[in-house]
Image (cartoon, rainbow, N blue to C red; front, top):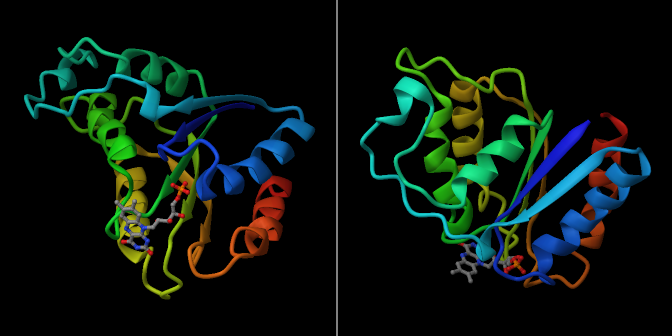
Length: 179
Ligand SMILES: Cc1cc2nc3c(=O)[nH]c(=O)nc-3n(C[C@H](O)[C@H](O)[C@H](O)COP(=O)(O)O)c2cc1C
């Protein structure tokens, strides 16, 4: 499978990367072709809401989103990896999700129907509902985009418990196994 990782944390050695590393290790072992995109390094402007992209699928903003879209279009599986920022996803990832409106057409049919997605999230707090809002956002967005949300790993309490990431390792391995 072709896999694109949309990496939304600005910290390359932080909690989200550690969680992602379990997934990358498993995916590579199974021979999948993986591209990790560090969104923080890219120049991606916010969606301007003109909806001009619906007609031809082309956004009028000329920036790095063009390359991100190319990778997504070539992928079977998209991994959305993000820290929880204020009960949501990071700004780096939200910019990309907003710009993904250009995958819809004028009838709001998706141009990327049938692709699969995995979400990985890390949070500082171990509150049970800390990831409810971003999970609903992912679920609803994927539904509209015709993307199959095949799994999610939510590592809560990373700033409170030293082993929070390690405790999620098995869940990631099981997810990779199920692919
Ligand atoms: C701007 C900002 C907002 C945050 N908001 C939350 C939050 O709403 N809930 C929470 O549990 N942790 C929150 N955190 C903590 C991060 O989610 C947590 O430390 C995460 O694991 C960081 O991932 P990283 O190491 O990949 O950057 C926030 C951190 C920052 C910097």
